[in-house]
Length: 251
Image (cartoon, one colour):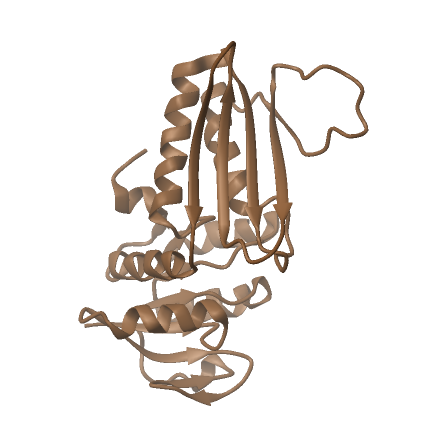
């Protein structure tokens, strides 16, 4: 039985993770961390110092401001982490990479298995189509999302751009430009509205044909399920930086 410490236990994603784990015989949440104390089917603390039983893995669905506390607790106690929070700064990403030299860290911009699969497909499409197709990425999310573009859109753009030796520029806003679209760019567009959970399209537009690689998430449960799957995968792993490709067995 894999013992999980859930950070952000009282948040929406924390509740989805708890729901997912409740029906899983291979793991259990032994306690949580959040800004408020609570008693669910497991105790929820406000401070890592209150955690008395050592977990096998940490799942984090909280806020970027909690990163330092998570990494300190994890490195001090040699506990693998599944970091599912998004919106980290470049400086925080470097801290994550540094921690991965000491402990196992699972870090990806999106916990959905499907999103990581289309990321691989988009990368292969870019390699096959070469520079003959214009590439545009469209991401749609609910009206409460703070960051734009989404981390997933950037993950997709980076995957595609890697096939061009990272020579393509990212264009986020064309309204102020009066010029034709250059070849060496990837357009990234954000839509915010309603309760859209998450939709991502990678559009390859060529001469007389368009190829689109798409993914739609209809509930947040897909991200919770991915995080739980990652937690099972990470338990007992050696130090290093892991992502969904390690689970899917793709590059």
